[in-house]
Length: 537
Image 1 (cartoon, one colour):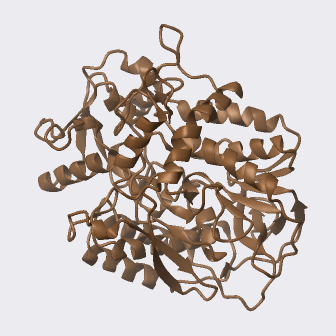
Image 2: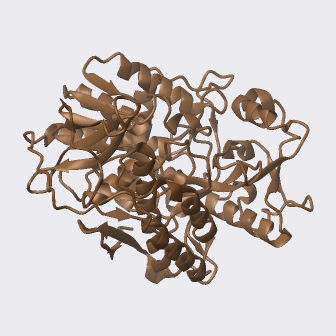
Image 3: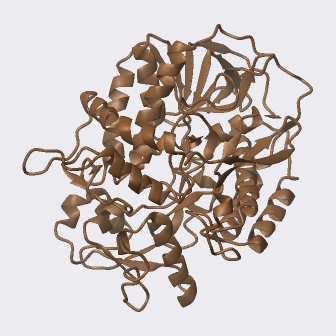
């Protein structure tokens, strides 16, 4: 299945195409260049506008005194609620420290303690201080800066900005050998070209724009995952959408990207309060306010529902040096009329991170030859049902390196794309975007049920009848959101239990029978099928 788009009017080639300019894409590109491969780096906006730069908390790695990869693994497995792939977690935690050291060697500068050692803090779900941070709460920006500097100084990496990738190009035997893409703002709205390569790496980040409120930037419409689905790749664990528990609440009219209040704020003493001014997390979980994200988000949702209020409160007034430690968050609060040193911060959960994505192996290979996926777009199995805080940047570093190494060792000859003119093509009218987002927030949000999910699916099916044959960026984006929303709701309906970041009000208990991965496929005619896979625990 493909989206309506014009015939490619221009062609570029490289050994490897990397789609996305966050930590996953940049790391993959740099490591591919270390293997002397030419790289085409395609990014949807400017090269520095991905989700990575918004990461506040930091990078988790067992670098502190007394900490070990095994302890990091244990925390990751607990957060993953029985669905982590053990091999993937071992790769993440054991190769993580060296990946961070390599990042530092590339120029990333992390905050230091008075002793001169790298300062480590703690976030939800971690039993040790193992979070590296930069600029207080601007870790992602520093990671992005360091990697971008290296990429932009490499003449073997060609960069195309403002380019939306539309669909995969495949050889007669199904191998991915390139992509069609449209450079936004260049030429006509139908100015599509093609990029050919011997391997394609999707690193397009998240899909938070499926929901009406999210911490993700506006470019996070899941384009890479949707493209992989249409190319025949399997997706897995897509029902596990992590809602960040503490996002600055403004009001429901403020759609799109919302200001994030990092977990590190609670790691350094902030306390959650309900509408009565009560500390409500102490009796819920042994780690109280630093419980795993799914636990905190669910409890906040419950407090809001019980009191019929749109948010709870985060008390930072007793924290010393808040402005110095969290300058980005401080500025964000102040710009919204809140002084966090004197006032309580209104917070509520918002869509934050997709723990699932395109199903890949330990080398980032999807189920379609020639197509690799890295970072939030991938389902490595390392996160299970709920990503442990600050494991996301680490995953991009670790698996980006592994993907490049595997590509270098197994690079095929350049394939010739076969264009099947009879293949089903679709394009959803962009007018359905807001109704789709509202349906997902209401029916497949923090708490779901069979009733709410069936209502969401019925709405999606009705919205999917609104078609257009006019190729344009907003139509391509909405079409991607439509496919991803459908996959999320289908999986959430199938998983009849509560686990990790998937909560069913009609199945509140975790069921051992559901310790398996739900996999979704989309065939060339647009038909969906589901299968299940045992988890390597």
